[in-house]
Image 1 (cartoon, rainbow, N blue to C red):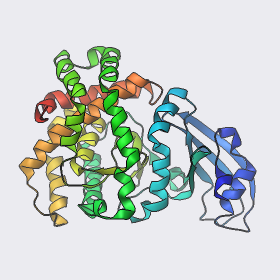
Image 2 (image 1 turned 90 degrees about the vertical axis):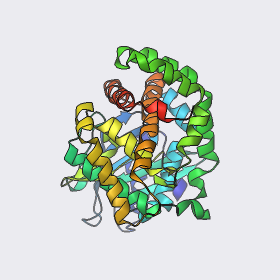
Image 3 (image 1 turned 60 degrees about the vertical axis):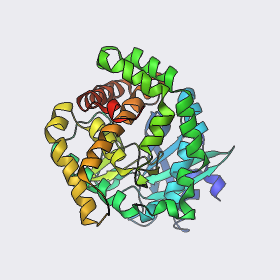
Length: 356
């Protein structure tokens, strides 16, 4: 049954395909129509569907489907690191335990050589609003996201890495991904800097290339803090808003890591630099306060700030690599996030916080 839900192309999302999914939840329900609302191609192919069926009223009619990317370059990159496979595993094994809002999984299956298909309830079904990658959040919105991230990190603080059921979060796939990132760091950084042009201050070119050359050492340092569950790709486009409360989308990069890395990625990408500069201290203090409320031991605010500075290097690299590869993000959004992350790295002299 699981293999029958696998699809490679939006054209395969037929009435019969939807029927196989709905029968997993309501054996008597019948699907009478499937209409594609939109198709968006990036790191994955994302399809919004309207599914007509006579199942229970609470069972969604709006579905959000993720397939491997139809863009060959993005597909080759994500296939090697099995990103969509990791998100399927997140929804099958982990999502029910996390203390933050996320979409409900209707079906999720991955099989090497056969494909990967993830079917979620569309967050718009009940009035939620998906974010846009280049959305610039307000300080109040950012504070809500920060509190959610802190709750997620506190819930899994120094726990998941000790549980053998979750070793996949830092297993061979993640090690392969990190190895590929290190092997390609220099050429991709050079290409990204060239394509970004004046969006990156000239003074960052030399330290950025040094970071790429020493990436293995930098990653070792950035992974040396207390371990927890991290989203690792927390920008505005991977959020949704339901009655002003944030939820989290796109768990392809979920892993073990240092929680303040999520905070650095989020603040560097989701805030206009002027808003970030003005509210950064209070937002970081808010994150620290939630950790204290959860009685996380042996944390010091000064050390947290130093780790935050160092972790800003990664979102800067990620946005430049995305631009260098191409086809993984809308170009206009990509350039805007490069502008924001470059400002954060320059403002806090992030590269000097790394022992490279």
